[in-house]
Length: 215
Image 1 (cartoon, rainbow, N blue to C red):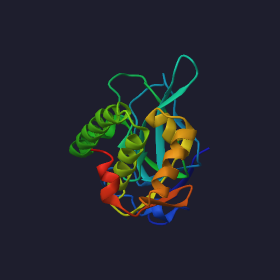
Image 2 (spheres, rainbow, N blue to C red):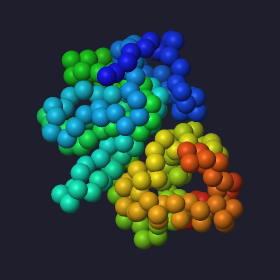
Image 3 (tube, rainbow, N blue to C red):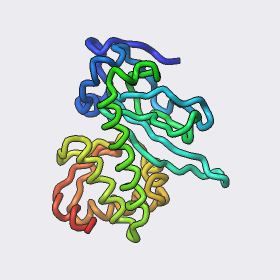
């Protein structure tokens, strides 16, 4: 079940992620729905229409393939809006990856912040196109470098990157096994480019070398 809190009083259990949240438009509901990690938000085939703004936390969007494998197509972070669909039913599943606070908007409220929603939809479209370019890269370490730089940019271009997702999530997003993700993170660590502060926190020691891997 979802829990409810007011934005003026709620504090995230993960201050690093909560600090990234941008203030949503005043027309968004003030109530925040609190979801535990790995909670389903919507499923493929359900009626679409509701939009979601992440106050804190993170969400993975994925599809189950015919052979049972999972393909993660997007991660949404604090301050971002998701749930846009071209059709009347959901094309993907959406789940939280960590404890997450969401604001929801129904279709009847769209007109109240149409410019903001249009900008969010366009950003999502561009990010989806960039994801295709990342998956198409030949080198696993290149894919991982691009992914980490994108996370850093979305989190404010800090040297410290929060990973609100598992290694398995990252592998399903980049088209790699969890072993390949872990092996290439270790390679970047051994090369002095990264410091693995924990399983959910990475410090970029040499950002220029990380960027060169993407060229």
